[in-house]
Image (cartoon, rainbow, N blue to C red; front, side, top):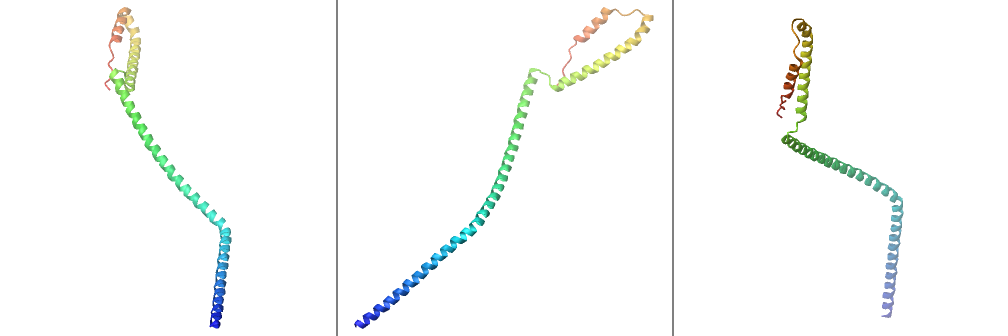
Amino acid sequence: MVKKLVVKKLQSVGKDSQLSATIRESAQQIWLAGLGAFAKAQQEGNKVFDALVRQGETIQKSTRKVAEDKVTEMAAKATGTWDKLEQVFENRVARSLHSLGVPTRDDVAALSKRVAELKAEVEKLNKAAAKAAPKAAAGKPAAKPKAAAAKAKVAAAKPVHKAAS
């Protein structure tokens, strides 16, 4: 019986030493795998870092482009809104000035054109009168200056009506 116990102990010690040897061997392999992974990470780390930087730059460029497009779009909308607001303001000011009887630019331009036409007519009449004056002086006495001045006063006093706008 003692013999059987000794044999069992020896077998169990042999099994224990095999188990511990297997554990030691596995731990050694795990350690070596960790060292290999660390070395690989050091070698590949710079490559991975550079790749991440390039990818980040690409994302930044696309994001910047989208942001600039949105800013351009918003600026266009704001400009349109300002243009509308400006038009509304101009229309209201024009209506206010019209209700006060202030002539518009078109009214002033039409009046200036009419004055230029009348001036040309007067010059034309003056030239015709100057040509006719020597002929009339020979046959008739000249018209009285006071009567001519009175006619000019009456013509100047006539009101000029503003064109309807």
